[in-house]
Image 1 (cartoon, rainbow, N blue to C red):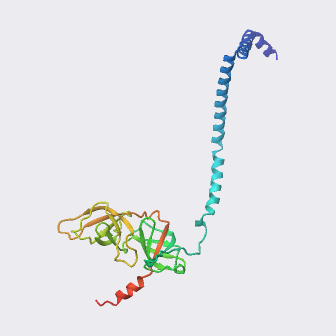
Image 2 (image 1 turned 135 degrees about the vertical axis):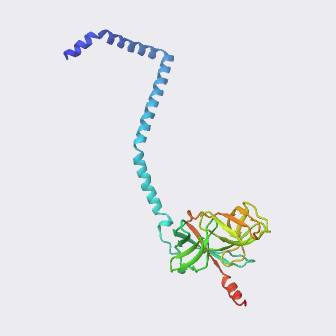
Image 3 (image 1 turned 30 degrees about the vertical axis):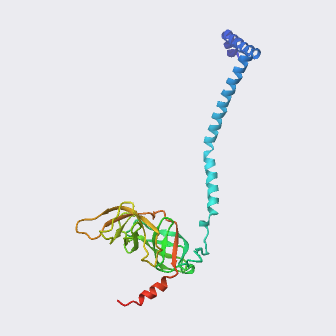
Length: 275
């Protein structure tokens, strides 16, 4: 207490000056409208900036809590998705018309296993014989060709991926109908090769490649890809054509299995032909 009294007595002039300054400012801003308005505007801006800084700081330190809350909410929403349930039903899309008779049915399926890095790749779907799946059915995605059904169990089937050396698809160049066989050489999963296109047929980069009508597996006209590059060496009778595939096999999740309703009739008729 003694030190405090000594400190005040030593600097009482400064404290008196500071008090008079504050009293003077109070009188100025209280009895002069312009100075009062200026002071109010300044203090309002300073207060707003202060509260904004406090609010931003509080929001920053509450980000973890907000993130945990969003994760919990996302987990609940994901649990309500159809992919979280086992679907025992069958989805079939039919094409009916009074003039054209239906030839193809499409069965929706989900990819439950897939490989893209091997030389011979396979895909597993959650549809089997109980859903009407049979070997040698075509499989497509919303982007293009996926493969051909290889083997079937009651609830699952395996698919011979287009990224498999044993898979061969009948394809053609859309603009002129030149057909050949589409195969994968085991290198780039985005590139396949179109074989047996005659050298007299004009082809160009970015020409669209589609399925041909020389197949009982796929309907004609399904997009496959576009010509990435083509060469014709001297003495060759066929183009060397690389096709950039539309299907990104690393992203395939939903597919459609194609049932050709007239396949058996065509195959039975062709089997009667003598060599």
